[in-house]
Image (cartoon, rainbow, N blue to C red; front, top):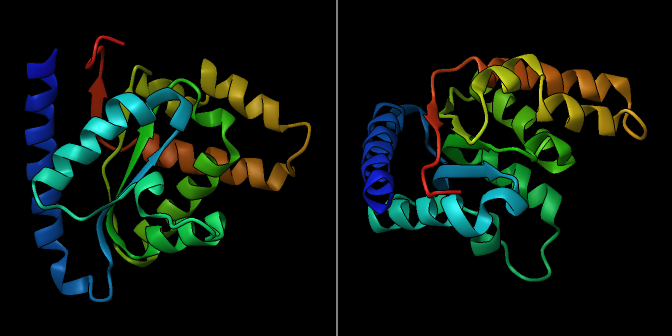
Length: 180
């Protein structure tokens, strides 16, 4: 399983470098090459930290919230700003992703930056079926339903549209990458 992750890490690093190089002319003012969007309880201490370390070792400047955010900073605006200042966004879709308002807010910003700043989006489907993301089924339906009680329907519709759009992109469908 470690070998399988190493192979993915190498493939991903090459894709990130290639994407970064092809967008360099339109990316002035960018602070990060990659922004990682993920549900912490699902992947922070497993897949995402391994991916961050592989990208860092390859010299790819990557934003991961617990590494780049300084104590005392207001989290929300800094996260959205980091997305805007990145060349590539990597949403890591996992089982509990849709239950997080922040993951979904970030995803809407990622889609906006894809459209307005030509930011590349490289989705990773970690132990979830891409169709569940795209069609809001399975744990994605459950997560979105939880928000019905306290989130305006217009915002939920924006989240669904972003999930459909990014869930429809070609990405990496990872099954049992680290045995989890």
